Image 1 (cartoon, helix red, strand yellow):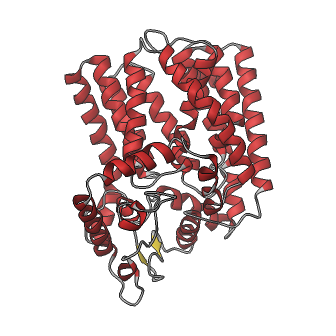
Image 2: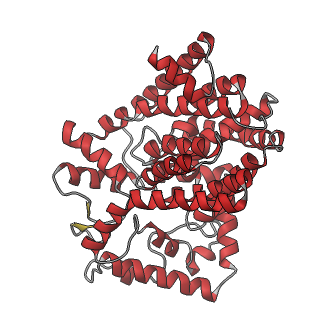
Length: 424
């Protein structure tokens, strides 16, 4: 009874037995699909960022908290990645040994959480029919779970992102909501620092909902609370690395995009490169730099290139922030990322087929909700914020935490639902 009552509170009203059964069915299907995916890909080698997450997690399990071998193969304190996901992996490695499959299976329940949260978001924004449809779409849509069962931070970041989106759009902006949203966002940033783009949605949605003066104040409060959540990790970085690193040094990824080799590539313009032409000296293991020195030099060269070629900002925004992030490109280009990230090519292809249907339906869903300016413009602000943040490096993976939102909006568009004047 307590669970049912709490579910009603989160869903914004009484939940019928039929709704609960349908939600349970969606969760069961979703978990079955995720378990099957893990078992079918259990022999896949770690690839992309999985390698670093695995390394940091195993070091944590051995007692070397937040150490890394990057980039010179020397064991040292680091802040290459936000701490949340390596800590999660390290916990499981400490309990079960160095077995990535155990971690992947342990992440399966996050799929149930993601499905339930998507149902709550859809129900509060668009009603029962859309919520039920969204739960089944998120349960079986490959791009909504493809990273959940791999060693990627999106397994934790996706449900956290949906929770923040629920906090932004499903109730009137108040100080309490701003504090709660800030707490959630702070935790999210410690898992995936790029989630800072969600603040664009906070500002626009709340500014339109309660007026810009109060909306800006509540956004500032939300930002302050998020900063306080992140602050202990920032202090750790100051003490250990002897420099100001709020979460991670991943902003230095600019160097891999803003360089002559990437900009002039005729096939993959502005695609990220780990060691572009002319950068070998910075990554020479015979002359290692401290993490802060490397970070500073990489940013300096990136900004120097941008200063000399200001149009590169527009080029990178188009190719990364739009084409790659939202997959408005040739299918073969999107599938080229699969092997680099250790994903299933077949599942990715099916997922992109479904995405090609969901994206236009999501735009229709936004159009049908146009009377809810705070919702529509807030979602568009989040999309634009993501495009700007991922201008430095992008691809299908970077959109993963937003896939449930796309599914919710697509179901609203397909079922002809209109958002009420106020959320439930």
